[in-house]
Length: 332
Image 1 (spheres, rainbow, N blue to C red):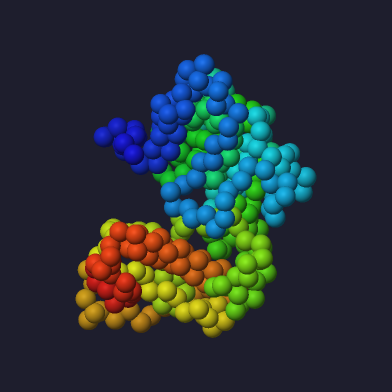
Image 2: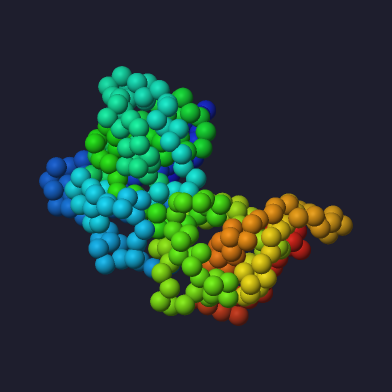
């Protein structure tokens, strides 16, 4: 996408989210044109982060879906006007409630109506975000206005996410939060859809039964590691989906049954094998080790599946079907 941010002197790449969404909704959907807007406003927008992989199709009607809602009695189970839905992330907190709301809203708003427990339960939204086209456009307009001001007072990671949340508070658009849209943070105790993974036996972790309930997707915003298996979006080869690139070495199929509690971080790019990396960098309790195993098996399997599809479709005899390890390949 084209570069959309705070400008050359104050770049924050995640501003592409509000600005890119608004740009698409105006220049593709035509939401800034009343006639065109009326034709599409009842549709559904599902806004995902680029570091997400779907295990099955995302839906907007959860009445027949195996779903873990944050509230025992959710406000809705279907996305409709005035009733957006979103993921309750394992890593997002409520620091947005303590920011300078007057500055962010240019003196026009406050969050007095969401003070207390309503803030985290109804507004602590994270991706995926699901809303009608009409609601999402209202959010996108205000989000694009607020996000730079959030960055003024909170110039760090999550600034754009806090901008989204504050925009929804001013539009009176509380979200029905779902724990099980995606999983990302293996160490969270009560958030995300880890209940499904914890219920699998160790020998099912890397190959879940077809009828096992699972999250809809994987959000690989963290790094995942156990023993000498490792995955990070920042450590993939830049040309990973290509004819010439090898694929990531899969973890052992019985990774979870080995019940590892230690993990090693691979050496940096350009390392030489004279450096020894024998000391474990992380330790885990067994419940988290099981989750790390799931993410490693699922993510590496899916990115290799994508790479394999590309190679078979485009590369012919030039396809590199070999595998590499981050621990031995200096060019990872």
